[in-house]
Length: 94
Length: 469
Image 1 (cartoon, rainbow over the protein chains, first blue to last red):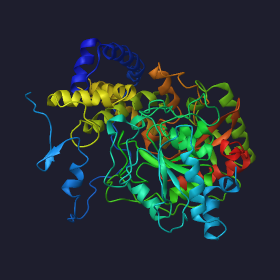
Image 2 (cartoon, each protein chain N blue to C red; image 1 turned 120 degrees about the vertical axis):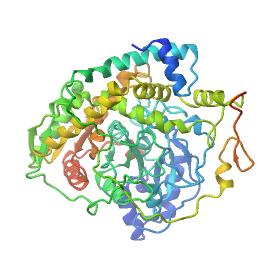
Image 3 (cartoon, rainbow over the protein chains, first blue to last red; image 1 turned 90 degrees about the vertical axis):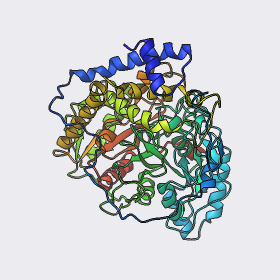
Image 4 (spheres, rainbow over the protein chains, first blue to last red; image 1 turned 45 degrees about the vertical axis):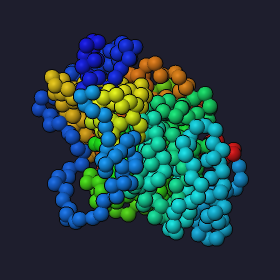
């Protein structure tokens, strides 16, 4: 069961602003989904190693060869707001 | 339907090479059909072909909106990326262009590939050309519908938990999810990086092999990509003598609707007619695959989607203050399912819950991969229905997220284990297509394609809206 407070906490972590309606719906939907998911608690997994990557490769190395990157202007053109050669954002303190 | 539209992609390429059809003629034919699409399968259609000469001889390919194509709108069907035209092109698209296949258009999809019905697109749902009141499946629903309707000769999509195979099944076409790492993920807008893999959606198995052949290979831009260990062959098998097929009761019994089961049973009989051997194999942890998947995929997604914050690309909702800019940009830009998965993933990774949810899910993943390893010590391939049901009605499952997630029951175990699987049309149930899925060990695509080809010839599926114009 995920209550309203937990939904608001997680939404804050995820940088998502939810409306009051969304908070209610999220609480009930996530609780239902987690009820189903929690069936994996029936499994004995204590001696099982976790899998994070399915293919057995490690330490993929390559030569460090310098190459051109994209022109700064081309990348800044994609931004909602840019100026002085950088991404412009509102003040954190406002 | 004109004769051009009845040619498979491989046949069209051959006719162009033989000088019987011109590449321009084929381009114009499909460009007009794509532009006239009324299923909402396309989000963007190209004006001019953009590929050079090559073995694919100018046969155009429809590309899921998840792939970045330089200078072309690439939104992953999300409003948060509206206006974004990437400065670079995905490796798989670049390779297909280099092989002679121009990009025909960008196809609709569930937003960020999160969905099984295409109803989660920020640009509206796609209709299934078999029955326009039904979903085409998802998340590669636009690619599947375009191929099934004949507005593209073939297409590429991506599969994280079934997003190529399930829409292929629901639209009566072929869809191949390759081995993890077989095709570069560079330039694919990321959903769940340990699962995402791109592959072909085509009218037949030969087309799938031909398109896949030109997508594979190690890419310095994707450190998880691997060299494909052999040449991808065009399938020729006519018989299945001595090929051992495992039938897992966990993915073929409970939860599969009767009409789908009936088509599946017929496919099993055809396998035996062709000389194949059927054997029951257990995949005891596969009933837990949905749970593991819906923890792992949202957890990875919650991290991958943190980049949509209104700073570097896409949209920005407000300039009020920094926190409001992040929170409101994401609130306005993401749809309901994407928000649900970000919340689920963030919760599963948050302090105090990580081990109970994400950690346990990763251990279940190990057990699922072990199950397949055990099974493939006894059989060559595993055969199941692709989807528990035929295409469902638009709106039927949108209020019940878990019911929607169950659409992936037969397709989710394979990407968790990183193994390849194909869906081919098995026949019709109540006038709607049913997919048959064949899965094999990592890098067994040639074996899968050969068996799928033999079975395809035996089934002789002749349905397809594309045949009727």
